[in-house]
Amino acid sequence: MKNLKAYTLEELITELEKFGWEKYRAYQIFSWIWQKGISDINLMTNLSKEKRQVLQSKFYIGSLKVIDQKIASDGTTKFLFELEDGNCIESVFIPESTRKTVCVSSQVGCPLNCKICYTAQAGFKRNLKFYEIADQVLQIQNILGIRVTNVVFMGMGEPFLNYTEVLKAIYLLNSDYGLNIGARKITVSTAGIIPQIYDFSTFPLQVKLAISLNATTDKIRDILMPINKKYPLKELIKAVKHFVKQKNKRVTFEYVLIKEINDTDDDIKRLIKLLKDIPCKINVIPFNPYPKSPFEAPSIKETTAFVNKLYPKLPCVTIRKSKGADILAACGQLACKIV
Image (cartoon, rainbow, N blue to C red; front, top):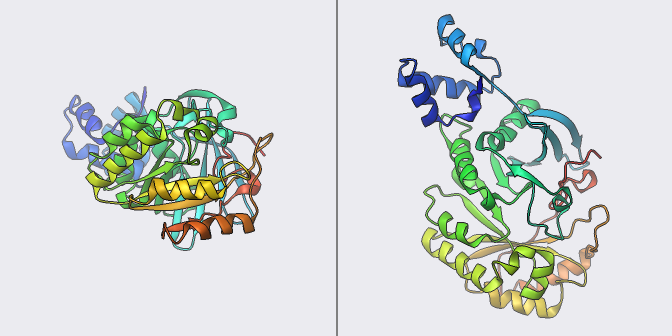
């Protein structure tokens, strides 16, 4: 038997044609699963009893299993989900006024070994399938009884190393028959996988792109993010400029600020030089410590001073205060640990 969630809408149409079923039946089933969030085929009341029996003989509706759930003092909620193969991932719900954001994982662990991220400590197991990515959003909606408005691919893993499945997940999240989340409210963050940045510039949906930058020299970025040795800053900036030109939209740069590592006046000058010609927003994120982390977070005063020096030359700069730090749910703190 196969999980019905493992089919895209187009694949489901093809599969049901084998039974001689009309095309619209696939739309009905897909909507029951992804819009109504059911896990029981018997609840598909616009299908005859006979058709439901056929489905039950061939398929089931699998779901992520909640292993742990923690609520932070700021309302952020972290979920530890178990996959069907026993692996685990973490997802985060972030409530902000009318925005209801879910931060999804795209891999079980991560292969990049970034020194600023706790996920690196978990190692890498495998890529997630598209439906496992989308199901994080669906399950959080069902559990909390809310309507998710925004999705960010900023959880465990590097989305662009799971490119095909991530794109399929985006289509499902955006589909009128899926979770119906606006493309402009979906953001994909990458550590800088250059070939996929070029490919993503031709992706038809108006999904946002964020770049995890975190350093202004190859020497420091090589240490913080070893992927920089393969895709150095000069080539990364070139790819981003291509994306901006092709999509005619700005990108977001994420800059995790680390005390006495990437917070100098020289870093400010280099950051201005790197980004001054790129339509962009810069999120300065004070480093979020994790267990046995080798780095220290800057003070609020130091972070504010850094941003104020950037502001005259790079006008769209914000300090992004990470939410959920007290339950290890903030940026760079996900590692499938029960705390």
